[in-house]
Length: 177
Image 1: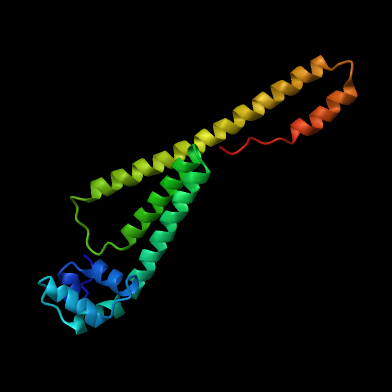
Image 2: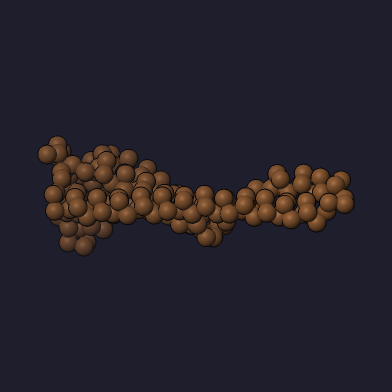
């Protein structure tokens, strides 16, 4: 179903992410990577490592992107407790799921129901959060209207004071959670 691409020996040995990390994050040369992997018993050439590094520079960018997204998510969680945390987490998982599905080269029908179920559940979480936020704003607006009605009755003898309070209260918006 998917297209077949030639895989380097690094990929065949399952060392792809490790080699990319060693090269990009640890600043190791292809020769140093070869030496280290050979010391661990891997039969691998410097040329295979060089091809992998060249072919997978985009993986390094994706790892950096994932790291910055994770950092942004953590910062959001620290700064905004409550539903914002849940929404940020759901958005992050939705984005990662989308990226994952774009990279699928072959479809394993046994895994499809699990993926579909996850997408369905995370989408429901997102929908529920949005509904909860909308309901929160409706309740806030109803409470604000009720307060204004009570103030109008209580301040019948002082319409100028009511007007001042009305001007302040009527522009208030529900605070973020």
